[in-house]
Amino acid sequence: MDGKRLFDGKKIAVLMGGTSGEREVSLRSGKMVYESLLRQGFDTILLDLKEDALDVLRSASFDIAFIMLHGRGGEDGTIQGVLEQLGIPYTGSGVTGSAVSMNKVMSKRLFIAGGIPTPEFLVLERTWDGDRALSEAEAVLAFPMVLKPVNEGSSLGVSILHDRDEFFREYSGNRGKYQGLFLERYIPGKCITVGVLGTGRVARPLPVLELIPAKEFYDYEAKYTKGMTRFVCPAELEMQTYNDAQRFAVSAHVVLGLAGFSRIDMQVSQDGVVYVLEANSIPGMTELSDLPAEARACGMSYDELVLEILKSALEEKH
Image (cartoon, rainbow, N blue to C red; front, side):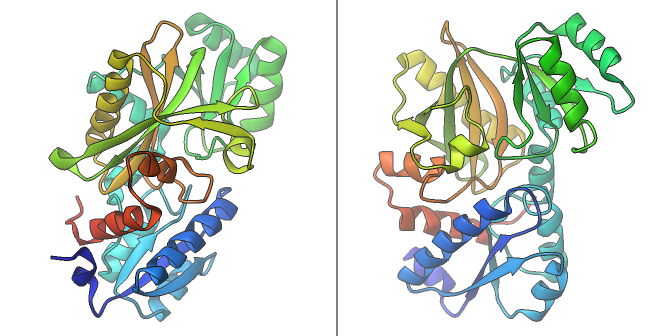
């Protein structure tokens, strides 16, 4: 059956915006998905969810939610739980997969349990002052190291710490800003990402994309500013490394319980070892985003990608 026929008589609401630090990116993703659905002839509306999200969802009339919310509140299982209560089918991962993948520390623990390589890390306790945090860090890691929020996306709050001065500055500036922080071993090498489509046993990887940012690393500015990052897709890697990246991407998608689509971010060391950093359960869909670029590299148009994601709303959530 034509995939579009599955949605005959159904009104699709694209949920975008939200209240996280990724609001502006979500608005761009949502608008592009909305325009794609219109091009394909779907009955579609746009919903910008702010603090009154629950009231908006209850008052709007629609049959299926296409979630394009990034970050906390939209990508962490919160909105998925609301939609479950309202009985509205939605795209992508369910409550558990969304919540687990948004928590980078929990994700890394599951990667380790699943035999998926990930850099060594240290969770920073909220009660630790700078001296205690540095002492604990130096017992486990060496400079440079990476400071990351536990529950953020789009590289918000991420910084590479090269020495003690940077450690104290970034730790003191961020410890009260985010719900939790952790440190990760810095892996010099290539920054890559792999999109995954499907669920469970039918999950499949897209081509590996190498990201070459103009800055030291692929931060928020590099991700969403035109000209700040060069894409190489498929990535220029040794065949074994390339295959490992795709294999680990699918494994990470499955072990985290993700569904429909995701994007798995990785680092390749200078000796060709692949390390999985984190998963994105609702990757960006802007004109500069990674997932659409990977889809194009294997001959899939933006509209075809949107249709495949939309079909995930018909899957049973776990």
